[in-house]
Image (cartoon, helix red, strand yellow):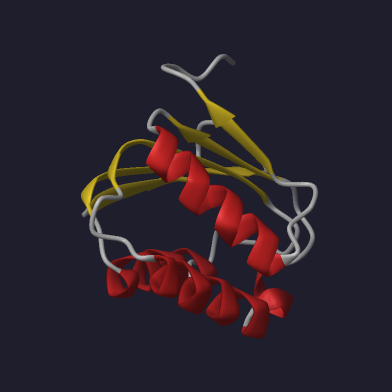
Length: 117
């Protein structure tokens, strides 16, 4: 799995782009990286682009484990808004499952082929 963290393009917003096949460990690692980054601030908005992410190896148990980890670290994320962009129905389903297990009711998950700014 490859990812990029863009703190610069939109002030107050972290733009994450993830591509390729991923694992639970890699998903946890990229979150740990940005939470430790000095440019991260509580309540920052996050836009995650999963259109290039291959979720075929991600299981529902892994999604629940990722959600549980996020719930334990909720104080590090803050209350900023989150949006996720996906292009594959399976990735959409996994993102919705994650949303359900993290109580992220105000998170937007959008299916589509491009991000409009």
